[in-house]
Length: 306
Ligand SMILES: Nc1nc2c(ncn2[C@@H]2O[C@H](COP(=O)(O)OP(=O)(O)OP(=O)(O)O)[C@@H](O)[C@H]2O)c(=O)[nH]1
Ligand SMILES: [Mg+2]
Image 1 (cartoon, rainbow, N blue to C red):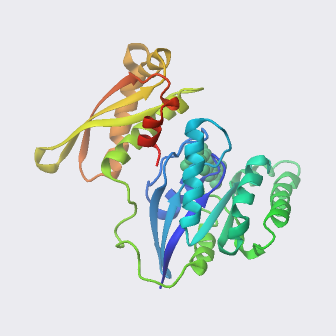
Image 2 (tube, rainbow, N blue to C red):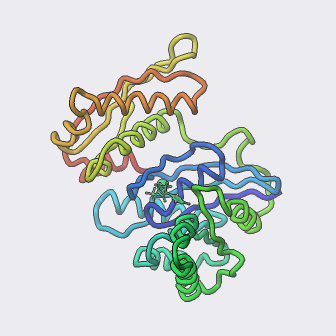
């Protein structure tokens, strides 16, 4: 049997977290349409007949000098070195630009242990349903051409078109990765699918729902924190007091909404999501606070992103 760690890398919104959720069949990592949703190195475990893959989902790799961004880059880079193999996801629906080139240069010394997923192949295909098939084909060809220039040592059979969202090509990726892993016993028991603790998962679900309810700069200005938690009703209910933090009073007002409609909806949807993943009900007390310019504060960045 094989077992080992696979770091997932890619630009923001490439579909890394979606891939992990689809591959594991569980809601491991939160997903949204805004870039830089993932802020932590999150483990998700996939058991196959040939062995166990411990995936590490990482924050989208995007060069920027902003404090939080530097931290996100550091997490992705560090985890890359830790892996026995690497899964590099490329978003076919966008141009192969600077962001991809930066990632390719990070991967140049890791080509022997890298598998590439050309993701969102479903979008490329649907766009081609019209008059011409040219756009879809050219996206794949263009990506392959860039890869052959920048990562020439990755063999063709380790470059796979996939759709993380539609569950297409996932098994091919898993088989290619398993081949790159060392022989060994499983690193985690079979019934474990993530290493995240309950409090972290609760803050992530709240943040996912808050992102889904807001727009523009607010999703990026959010973080969530659990202040207090207590098991009640003989283990049937977890009571949680949590806060959503934003950077400005104006953002707080938007997050609460008219007649508190927005925050109420975030709370209800978060509780429903938690009901799906925990063996008990979560009773959530959720409020909004302002932590002025928290993205400039090292102490907060250290606390929420690791
Ligand atoms: N059509 C289509 N959409 C996808 C696919 N994979 C992911 N998406 C969408 O792309 C968006 C980003 O997905 P995520 O999984 O959050 O991307 P990520 O790479 O984890 O993003 P960061 O955490 O921000 O780096 C979401 O709206 C997903 O639904 C795919 O195969 N096809
Ligand atoms: Mg993600």
